[in-house]
Length: 192
Image (cartoon, rainbow, N blue to C red):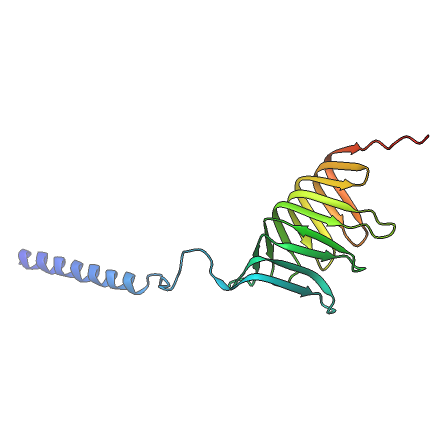
């Protein structure tokens, strides 16, 4: 009789173990078989393109051109290689620029420029020309704001400003270097 109880206990434990394994298998977290772990894929790409972005009122906010544009489907953002762009202030005065790459969010309200960024404003009446040199720059074309934490150089006739970090407003024509600011003045010819 002891032999029989022993085998019944072993059989009962085996059934319990099998039932537990089935419950674990049924309740396991499901893995999506369609998951792709590679780089994001583009919805579309363009070569040798020009794009004009409009603000909410239908006015030109900025224009950008370049050899390659890729639009990402998951967030609608745009990546541009070797862009040339025109940012406009509220009076329609252009700031012309170039950089190694640009990222633009889906709404066109934020544009991040990276790698050898040059942005220049041409002289217009009483407004002096200005050229900004930096390694990265975030712009908000719809509001005319721009900002960077990187070392920056601002060149204007007669002076070169260097500093770390920049905040600017294209609409008010104000550029502010944030720290470690140095200025070099070009000597003026003496009047006789």
